[in-house]
Image (cartoon, rainbow, N blue to C red; front, side, top):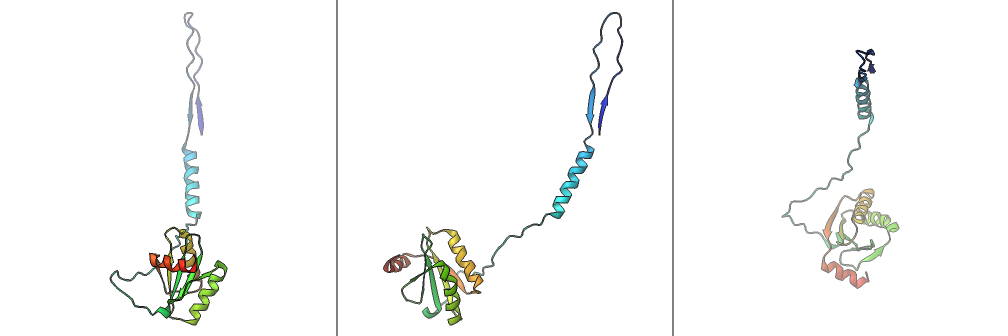
Length: 163
């Protein structure tokens, strides 16, 4: 482990004092390195690696255009303060609270199994609002949804409602 080398004291020669030899201290680092690698191996083998949580999104080809009947399209609009407005087809948007949102989605999708949900989030809204909506759609087993940017026309429609 550690070793101290001492020199034998020398006597006086012809009236002169000799300096004592320096004591050499040598620390053997081998056991500490062994323990370090043992701990490193232990932590590497016992640590559970977390997998990234992702959602698979299938995107259509860029040049494809899909026509959807207005009665089969539910539009969700999220304004910057996090308020959600919904409408089906060309109806005026209605405000829905976050507590009633899940119930609304389940009810509308059971009434119309071919319903497609279009999510439009304002640029100034928080990103986590969109993620929360997509999570609620997944919980409700809604697999047919799309994300689109909110346009000026959407802003005008929301202004009619008072948003």
